Image (cartoon, rainbow, N blue to C red):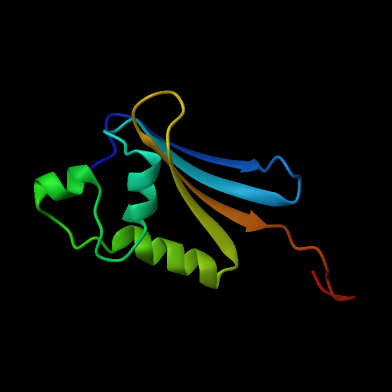
Length: 102
């Protein structure tokens, strides 16, 4: 609904070498940093959602909560190349394994 013409899904190691990042990047209308932060709160929508008059403003809040439950971080930010958004889930790599485990 808001993604624009192009949507890219990327999986990569984070710069710290200890995390993995799953990112979804689009070229839709985008939001400012402040709008991204507000949109991750329950019952809040970005400008495009408000103008369409659809949705309840829960989707990004649900993603943020599920990420927290999985001990991951959810990040939403404007795309650096212009219009669009980057939504990322950052998962920490497993550091300590029990002997005999996978």
